[in-house]
Image (tube, rainbow, N blue to C red):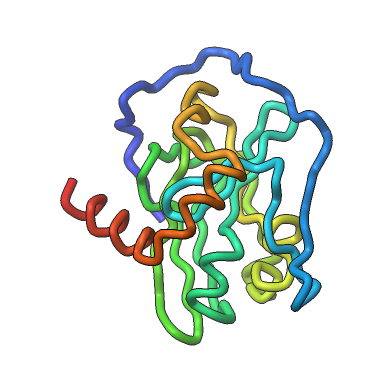
Length: 174
């Protein structure tokens, strides 16, 4: 996947962002006993989660997307060393119900890709916040995280039934 480097900034500065607290709070869905949400992660309007670990951002898709689109059959992800801009497409997921694009929650350089998802994309469905992570990035600017939602804010936003569709339409218009 080829991606342009023209973000609002192309910084080579050292990242002085907050290190991970080292504490993951992953709640299980009482009905399915699967991870329902990672309370330590931050979330985008497109249901992409980000969790800082040792100055790297781990990125994946939330349970909400998986509930909406069902079992994943294929996940296409970028190559390591690619630079991705915030709100750029970083991948594609194909499920039994649909194909959908994955949007970068923050800008940065891809430092690792979860290659296990090539052979076992169902790991995203089974363990979206642990084994189902998609990419690790080195953020350009840790302040980009300020534009994401905490778990509580994300949960309250989910009460709007057409939230994802509205956001995707507005992104297509820009």
